[in-house]
Length: 320
Image 1 (spheres, rainbow, N blue to C red):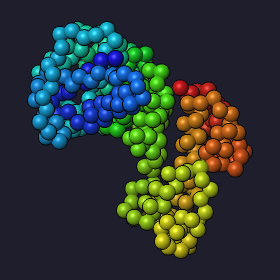
Image 2: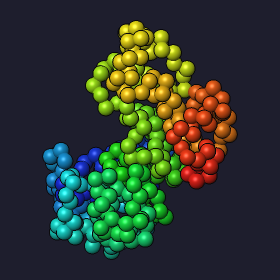
Image 3: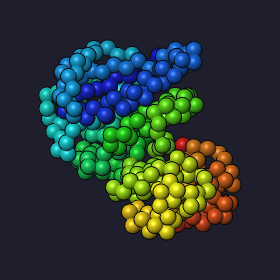
Image 4: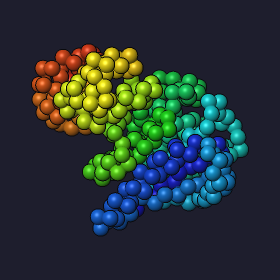
């Protein structure tokens, strides 16, 4: 069983801590249900037992332990706010504790990377953080090491992630990396995640793109397409979902989502293809079919609208 110490600091953003924790607990429950053992042991620790937090919930944390196991992981949760002081007594105490121990993996969520940087552990590491704190991170370490618009960055035994829900994606990646790829896929299904995202994915999810509107009918259509992006959706089928005419839906969707239904579907299919290029060795022809394209030629033509490299070149650069 791998011990995981989740560091909780005052003014913690709770989702940064409990999001990854729930992923690891799901791993335990699913594996035990299948007759296996619990895989991860979660410890919530902090310099202050009753740390303040984003939801005002009463917390009762374990103190920072004097000894840790050699295979232990450290997760540093982020903090609330855009202006974070790293000079508090709690953060100084936490940094001293981190520096006196050696963890097998160092993991940060959101602004937790700022704390990790303060310890000096990011001095020679590529890393990322929430987009609101990129400049803050650049003040702590060489600017060229800070990567923008990345969901998470892996450099050796150090894992840094962007904001909030990116911690869930990173936790799934860690389980996959721990030789539990099928378990990670099952957890994503249990947690009703539309799509698992990889390290090269942008911190702004393509699954949320074109959804910054309030029209319920358009959201219903988008939900349907997202549930089966590879399906050959006709405008007639989508109009039935929205309970309107095809002409009205076409106009409504374009006005609200700023793209046509077909363009929207193609974008989702391209994102699925991107994931398969990163995570599989499937031939381009198979990927094209799985993602709903007519053939590899159509896939390559649409891919070229959004990517400077060919699918094959992209795979060489970004495969995980």
